[in-house]
Image (cartoon, rainbow, N blue to C red; front, side, top):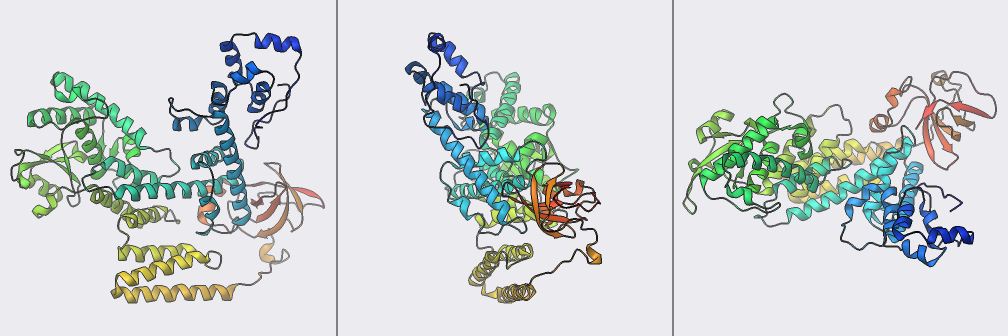
Length: 583
């Protein structure tokens, strides 16, 4: 225990540490302590994993206390990676020493891949085949993701390049997993009515870096249900909904009892918790994300309706979703069970309008037009999700600030996961890929992706031959044009337009802020990276922002970085100089 191991992501836990040779008297005093006291000492947090390995090799009693599935190694794991503990059940048997080793190995692998991204893609967009190494990872994916999150949470502005690529990798990993889960969810039978689960998948896909889970959202809704039950108890202390156990519910048939539930819900949601429709900022994507609806207590008709529907069903009221034009509604049956019903046998509930109950005529007044009876019908989960994603798609087409079109890309992915043969959306996706490709010779697979989409469209709808032909021709011409442009660009610091470039290739530099040593191997008169990189690296906060020379530097740890020149104006002498700021 005398030698402390470095507690960092680069630490490797030995399977069996070298046997120490403590003084006999000291060891005797230690092992004679009660087991609970020894365990408390070993779990105190002052010992590293390497220390525990050494302790366990000294004698049989300490080895038994430090058994791989015991409390000591569990505490080592918990202290090192606390966010992972939610993935383990208290009743599970876990070999904590083995878990520690596997997590440690995954962390090393994650950092190795992030470092390789820094070397390979520092001057270009990550191509669509750039993630192939990640797809072949061994070990639990949650461990790899956890290490990426650790990188993102590194203190302050340290390791910005690593954070940039860790974010990209984490985004890709989580979106792939969520999309696969959504596709499996969509294969459920039509009578599978977990509207909330589907809405959470959409939320997760559009916000893959946020910690969003169905369990957490359900827990928040359960707390609202408890408040409703408390209010309901004041209305009717013998109401059958009060007897429902957590996670279990059945439908109540009596209209009067259902009405009591809805009255209690309206009071809690709109009067007590102050939920409301977001009329002031209606066209905001946050209104469609369920975790944001619960945090901000506002949304649009479809998201407010899904929240209202989920609570009502948990309390035994069989509300149903209605895909009403321009304003999503819920319907509440007033007719006798088994009778032939028409649209006038329902009351329609506007969750956006504080749970207001509407007749058919009032529904038409709400949107200002007459609609057919078919539009008052109930819709399944897939149709509800289609409408949610359709709203996101419309917002994505409107966005003008985010030049990466991330919302449009995400909503297209989601829509085509549900309806892969939508020709117009496939055309839009092809145009979007082409628009974002920028340098096809660096990301040739992106061009192939565009051509694959266009070929699929041609198969689905030969009538789109003109549009497909134009895009194919335009894509191929762009490739040829870029090929002609390929050549070595000679840049001279002596040229007048490069007069602001202070440092020459080959100079050894020391970073002014972060202190690392590096050598310059290239430069640009201004920042040549894309808008996304500039935004993520917070380049706008630098003196002169991106309108200053940037240098390609090889750092002593082997990574390649892109560093800003800053405000320094003096030309350095031979040997080392200082660079102001970079990532």
